[in-house]
Length: 304
Image 1 (cartoon, rainbow, N blue to C red):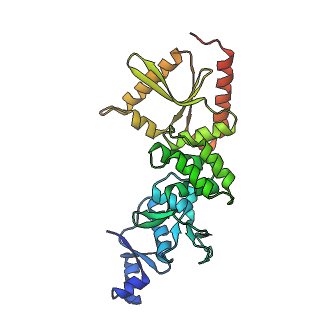
Image 2 (image 1 turned 90 degrees about the horizontal axis):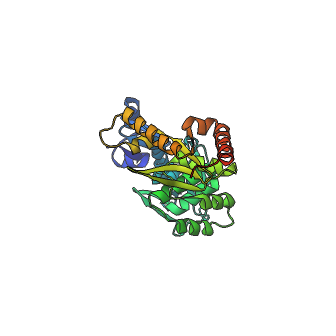
């Protein structure tokens, strides 16, 4: 099992500098940061490698230092943009001071009850972490993290409101307040959250999330619903895996989805779909598609 060890710990275990160097050269030890080594195999995923960096920073800091912002979010398992995984964020008490350095951003603040242990790591509490993300991340990703925590019942909306109130007056609080106001437990994926924020910012916010249309064999539930008769669907691979019944082949999953869409269209609804690639790289296309669908639906008579 891999473990992080500091140079001081290795000396206490009887290793001298030459032996540590030999183990690094042989690949038994991996140097993570100055004076901190990984004894074992490194993680093979990006978030895992980032968390190792975070723990290595903590290992070099005092006991009152905690992971915060994106670093705490990674420890909590919240969704993050890849760009956020390039810097380790920590909070140190104001009286301790501290300064940022390469790859590490040091925030100075009083934490009070906003710190806890997460898998043995010192981190900000989940509500505090989410508000810090709201203060520092793009609105879409901040809302996605909050949606995820609310959807999985790891945090309640009133806890977000309390954490936001505790941070009143700090830089970025207006952005955090907007994220808290938009956060919704009904969102079921990062793609849905980012899509909703995109549409709200374009003035095209849906009337309802996860609206249900009963039919003879069950219920068709849609991501976004506009009462004029438009359905919006974010297409992600996780969504199709979640919809699959045990033993269904990929072709059967796609066929079931086609039948579902046909049922929606037979109701006279306009169905608009978009993909991850369009959402991330062509958001204007998604907005234009929804705007056109809304205009079409409002101009056409609805069947009773």
